Length: 359
Image: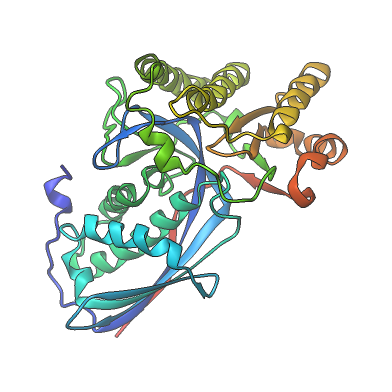
């Protein structure tokens, strides 16, 4: 369970009303987690790059009330399809944030990128919401910034597992690993000891398909319970996480390519060998991968790819090659992008509070 120091311990009066605005990025896993146990516990540890430009901005407006209610809008519009997820989230966090249930709450959120298309909008969304909540809690309890982020990571996980990683940058580790100090299944920890080769690392996201996925990540995770290759996969992920930590510390770009591309393909192999099986990659996804391999071989530029649970392709490379890679995208890859769209992103620093006021 969560550390005793993170239990709700008020020392100040609850504000009558107020508004808090937070911003939190998406993240892209380098070592993937696929499969989870109740409640929101990963079956293997993962490590991710925190992004910068792909983020969610969330405002919570709150007013004291005799009964708890909430309203949710995304991009200024009510979205009923999101309500069950948020209701489930509030139900899960109630014991840890009892103060929240003394308010009427209005949640307004917007993304800088398409949701439900293989970029982790649930990660940025729930981490932004959780940080706003723990910012209010800090006002009431006075706990430290370190504990605020730790509790936000814990709460985020109860909404979306990968959201626990979005609080921290440039990298975050979520899930217990016997060789990683302080690693935990219930929250993520920051990992900052990365070599200069990976600082300002670029992630250009090719939007192969911006539509809603035919199989949700939640359903995909559940199919790992009886997967014939799950045991071997979990073992592989533990080894790859340990190797990736060493790679990031030493700055070995070639080994980084080998491990991360293998992880991406393994993730989708698990989907294609589950029962029922399914495919989230599109023809454009495969074409881009082959083009990337050809480009890397002919140019000797360390351009690599990774995939999340969707069709879009994340192109990873050092900042000094940015213009060359963008030229390659415009010449060879943009034809595979829906409406010729792609997003230029890079490794970022995590979530922040950008505004708060109380009455």
